[in-house]
Every structure is written in structure tokens, then in C-alpha cells.
Image (cartoon, rainbow, N blue to C red; front, side, top):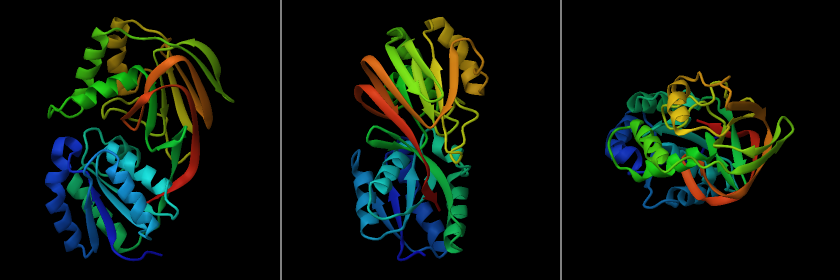
Length: 299
């Protein structure tokens, strides 16, 4: 059962400002479809999450987010942290839109808006997806520890309107500084290992950074996370692996290990950078990651 208008949350800075510029057209499409909605705009990082949680606690049961993976991340944490359930709809307007790809949401934002409006209008049956949790935070698409988190941090510092290519430039920038390989202990029922690594990627969806097909086997409704570990590699080896990672052909390379896991603990010899859905957190040395099957309903 649904009640009241849909809550429409917009991150106006998402996609280098594209989300904000699209708001009037999105509003017009929803109105044409007869969808009643109340618009909200985030002002700062974390604001969208707080607003979503507040609205869900007040009884809102339909949340629509206009933005990218960072906006989805905040919305998911707002919903998961609320006392009441709510369904989530996404109109992709970010840089990478990895979550939209994982959920088979149309990447054309106008088409996505029209399809979402149709589903809302007929109150279509919800689709359930899994949600990941690292320590006390939730993630919808994936988490990264090590080199990819460093790349993400650099990419987010750029404001160039070049779409996914910003992540390639960030990789090249990070290679200049060298590739750190901290010692880690990774423990799960499926895999236990100790030693230096370049990165660990924990995937609920198949794509990261918009263009990297990091986990082709990932399915966000199968109750599993895909753990990808890259052993120490040189700068030149990273460059040679990039085309394979973009096309999803890196599995089977000698430096790449994979396991499907439900829970994994990663202990590092020193604090390392990490990200959740592209949102970079303060460096940490211990990570407890698990999957929460069918934890979120989609509109």
C-alpha cells in the first residue's frame, strides 16, 4: 500500500550539475503522468541522507532520487537507517550511474523518468535487491579498499565535464605517486589469504567508475557479494590490465583472484583508503563486510 505524494530528492550537483538542470523537465514528465510529488534538494554532502531518513520516518514510503551513485548511496543509507520501510526509484543523472546499470534502469534520464512514472502509476510489484554493509555503513553497488579508493578520491576532486573518462585521468595521476601494497588478512568461509595486495573490490553490481566492468558475474539479487583481489602489480602492469578491466576480461589473469562471499573480514597492517559507492571514507585498518539479502525494494 502507498500513501501520500512521492518524495522526489534531487542532488543538484550530481553529474557535474546535470541533475539540477534536468529537474524542471523531470517534474514536467511526472506531472504529465499524473504523479503527485514533493521535491527536495540536498545542499551539502550527507544532507540527502538525512532528508530521506526524516521523510521515511514521517511515513513516506516512496523515495525517488535524481542523481548519481553518490546520491543513491545517501538515499540507501537514509532508508536503511529509518524506522519504517520505503521503496526507492532512481532517475540516473550522475557520472558513472553504476547502480542504474546493475538494476537495468534506462540510462536515458527522460526515458527512465517515463518508465518510473508508469510503474508508480500502476503501483507495480516491487523488485527486491541485496544491500551490502561495511562496518556501520551500507552500500548499494560496491566497496573498494586500496588503490581503487585512492583513484576514486582523486577522480572526485576533478570538475571536468568529461564523464567516465575522469576515472582514467585519476588512474594516471595515482600511478605517478606509485602503487601501495599493504599487507592484509582476508577471512571468509570461501577464501582466507594473507599478504600484500594492490586492492580489494567487493561488488554487489558489475560496474565501477562508469566504465570498468570489474565483476561481470555480479547480480544484486543473488544473496552474494563478488570479492576481487588484485595482488601487487607494477605501474606498467596496471596500464596493460586496464583494457581488460574495461571489457570484463581480466578474470583469469594471474594477479586477479575472485570469490563469491556472503561475509568477509579484511584486516590491514596500516590504515588504507576505502570507498562505498564512490563515496570516500577516512582511512581505516579493519573492515567487516556482509550482504543483506533482499533488503531494499525498488519502485
